[in-house]
Amino acid sequence: MIIVLDASAGIEVALSREGAEIYERKIEKASKVITSELYKAETANVLWKYAMAGLLSKEEVQKRLKYCDELIDEYIDISENNEEALNEGIRIKHSVYDLLYLVIARRNGAILLTQDKKLKTIAKEIGVEIE
Image (cartoon, rainbow, N blue to C red; front, side, top):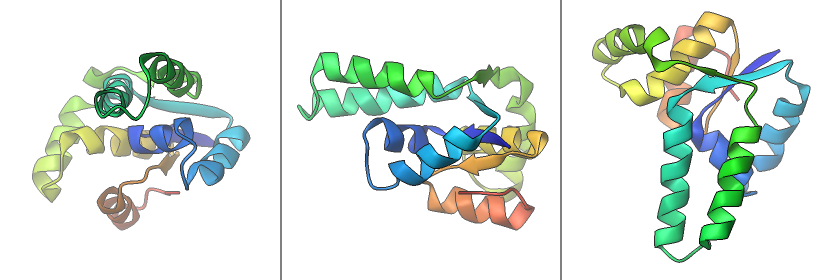
């Protein structure tokens, strides 16, 4: 089983939040965990917000960023999916950022792990398995 991990799910695991355990079990069972290169910037940005809010120290956000990266086996270059994600975004009126993950999941017959409720709804509608 191939998993596509989006930034929202990666952060959930890295911060040991409510949904972390479910995602961790799926990740452990996966033959491969893949994601968009965008994941790196998105996870770093979320952790930056935690540091700026004084919720995590600089050392802690660095540690959690490294952990986010360690969850991934393979990063997919944005250019491989950018045009398709853009076309889907225009068609269904949803952000290209999110659709990069969805397109990767669809292309690889993978399960999409996300916290994003709207993205889950879209994935269901087009037949992409979600968690």
